[in-house]
Amino acid sequence: MFGKIFLRGGKPIREKAIIDILFEDNIKKNSIPEIFDKKIQKKILERIKKTNFLSKEEEILELEGDNFENIVLIGGGKRDYFNLTKWQNLLTKAWERLKSKKVKNCSIFYKEELGKDYFEIGKKLAISFYLSNYHFDQYLGEEKRKELEKIEVVSFYVEDKKAKEKIQKGLDWGQLVSSGVCFARDLVNQPASHLHPETLVEEVFKIEKESKGKITVEVLDKDECQRLGMGAFLGVAQGSDREPKFIVLKYTNRQKKTNDEKVCFIGKSITFDSGGLSLKPSEMMEWMKVDMSGGATVLGVFKILSQMSNSEKLVYNEIYGILPACENMPSGKAMRPGDIVKAMNGKTIEVLNTDAEGRLTLADAMVYAERILKVNTIIDLATLTGACMVALGTKIAGLFGNDDRLVEKIKEISQKEGELVWELPLHKPYKKLLQSDIADIKNIGGGRYGGAITAALFLSDFVEKAKWVHLDIAGPAFNHEADDIMIKRGGTGFGVLTLIEFLEQKR
Ligand code: BES
Ligand code: MN
Ligand code: ZN
Image 1 (cartoon, rainbow, N blue to C red):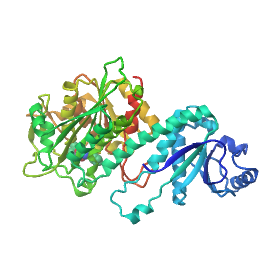
Image 2 (image 1 turned 180 degrees about the vertical axis):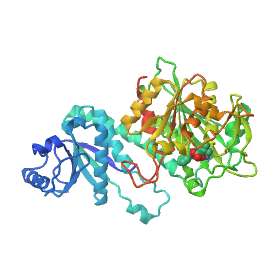
Image 3 (image 1 turned 90 degrees about the vertical axis):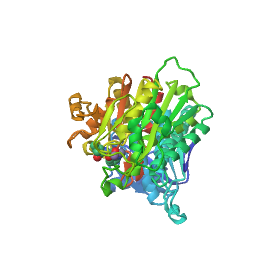
Image 4 (image 1 turned 135 degrees about the horizontal axis):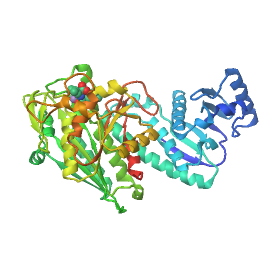
């Protein structure tokens, strides 16, 4: 990751740029931050009057001070509604301003309105900074790479010694977490020409090595999957020349906890989804390297776990990750519409559309998680349905679950982390849409409606006793539009922040 954040004391004297936040209630009293000397304060006041700057949320005022080349004042809105999530977004706006002027370093400073949750302050600052600085530049030539705008140094001025210590801890944690998000982004952005199931296996072994014994990895090849009866997963894989890999990671907490809850994160890991014989139209296929985003997110989390020194923060003894990785391709060996496959739990599935492949791979993964790993909590992330994007757009993931407490927990955490989710119903009566005449279930719901729900209902058929949440991340896993707050075009690493936070919270 690029750039560095320094904690400093005192006041900035001479800096390239200063970022500060003003509030609506403040502006009326005309109280301008004390860090600026009288002369600059006067100048700022004049400008505020002249431009009618009201400090409304996200309003920006830029000027030059004598010893500061750039002063960026951002509206924080009303003080009472201000929080650290907003602060994070405002900072991101400010970084973008500075980058557009090719400013490479800047200063910000602690102010009362940020509150006293110092750890969170450090964490939010680091995440905003590092995620904004992210670029997938691996395939760019020297020239183009140089043009990328990045901020090199941020100085954060804080007086209080105790606060500083805690903020530093938050900064370190935020940096580590960001590295997990960027790792996931890199994997998603990697094209299918360069990322195959075997590539994921290589990455997983690197993580195992870095973890110094905390993480162990098991990779099941085609024959082993066959022996276990994973007919659904193998059916999807069979059209491709690339071998499927069923990847299982296990994190063991060295600080023994007194509960025996085991959690498993399952990430959809289709390294390319052509649709199979139910081939996708080309404009949909264009970006189907995205279809391993769920798996990338799970690896992002394990990347963080591998580097984490303070495992006492984690509430689980055992954390598992599963990536049922394969490629969905048409060929003479490919699964045909109408074929029947048998999942690991013995259920037969009539595959009417080979493009509804994610649910097939996840079905076997969920059965494996419960029957072999004996986990009691499952969270799966999958770029599962275009229908979910129709329902919620590209920024919000669909959430389904069978346990109210788990559902509420994930909703609460994702909101705080800025990874938006919205609960959709696991409406049982729709299950009849999945009835097959000749098998136990079919893999599509028939009509055009409620596709995200029927997909989730399909998955629910493969959950036995576990508490389970399913996140359909087809929308937010990839950003097609212009660079957004902290999110560049391309893979987003959606879910890493929420999952890692989930592992730290009391249930
Ligand atoms: N990977 C796609 C879903 C997807 C669509 C992800 C757009 C990201 C962006 C999934 O495998 C798929 O093809 N789903 C089908 C299901 C249908 C055949 C029932 C879909 O959504 O069209
Ligand atoms: Mn598909
Ligand atoms: Zn897919």
